[in-house]
Image (tube, rainbow, N blue to C red; front, side, top):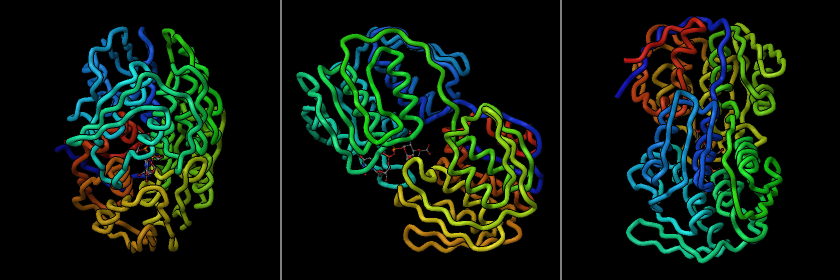
Amino acid sequence: MSSYIIEGGKKLQGETYVSGSKNASLPIMAASVLNKGITKLYNVPDIHDTQMMIEILKKLGCKVKKNQNKIIIDSSIITEFKIPESLMRQMRSSVIFAGAILGRYRKVTFSYPGGCDIGSRPIDLHLKGFEKLGVTINKNFGKIICETEEIKPTEINLDFPSVGATENIMLSSVLAKGTTTIINAAMEPEIIDLQNFLNRMGAKIKGAGSNIIKIEGVEKLKDVSYNVMPDRIEAGTLLCAAAITGGEILLKKVNINHIAPLLEKLTESECKIGIKENEIHLKAPKRLKAMDIRTMPYPGFPTDMQAIIASCLCVASGTSVIVENIFENRYKYLGELQKMGAKVNIEGKTAIIKGTKKMYGTKVNSTDLRGGASLVLAGLAAKGTTNVNNIEYILRGYEKLEEKLNSLGAEIYMI
Ligand code: EPZ
């Protein structure tokens, strides 16, 4: 397992940019199998998770060429309708292939995705959606076998605005004969990006970004080129890196509309924020002010930013309260922050953080993707040297993280 070594105490200064969105790229790459043809994607982040998606596309029979952030997928011939179990276990979001393969072939087999480090992460809403679309689902020995003569368009009410379930129902309905409506759909920007991509491919979808999405089935799709949206969580991570170190940065290639809840909170903690088109200028105060955070489905404060802003709150002046409303086990990283001197109390889904003047470098272990990023930020601000271990988690979701941080004056390197 690799590690980051971080020399703390350096204020981040200068400018960097945001890469393409991991959480928009994954469903869009899966959606490419709906078309018997060529899909060209640009601004795809070159990270572990997109590499895994390429492996799965190849296992399904697609030809894939990648050149840094450009990916060309030829899905003319699909020879396999099973999502490989080993890859399902390594990356839960590979379940997104189910909707795409179902949409094109009306049959797919996959295994329960591995629960991951932030909660059980069931897929009951995905399966209920498929059943409402007329799909027969058989389960044996951990395998889930889905098939149907044809996808029956219908109206689906989601118990919870699940991002993955919304995406899977969209994908399986694109080629159906008739219109499917999703009520209580997730409203995340990545859903809008998926709708834009699918419509560019010839689908007829509207409503993404609202809680009602209508998918009018079409007969044929066509080859498509598409530029993936910027990663709003990476943007938030880089802004928080400047905030926690008392720095001043200019962040380029950001979609400002996607990170309003975070900008609101950074302003509340007395950062000075300036925005212009797709650039954000942030000047941090000498010391951040404590504040309360409650995570909600979009457009509320994103759960993926919870761990990251928490490290800022550990050195803020005052006591902060975080309520994590989306995942049931997303505080594991706090135990690692406590090793660095953070004063934290967890009561159920609430974390109470008493800001201290300083945290101290030591050996800590990444527990998951965003928890790992949170430890990196704590290491940037801490006094002394921090070893962040198991950084494979972090490499799943951040492209060139240490290069970007070092270009801002940090001292971080991988071993
Ligand atoms: C997506 O995961 C993101 N991943 C997550 O980002 C993000 O945290 C999450 O949405 C919420 O915004 C990708 O887009 C690849 P959900 P997803 O279905 O689709 C429960 C990151 O760090 N639920 O909206 O899995 C579930 O247990 C990752 O980049 C059910 O109960 O999230 C959770 O408590 C982490 N049944 C809540 O809903 C279901 O069938 C939200 O899950 C599905 C979900």
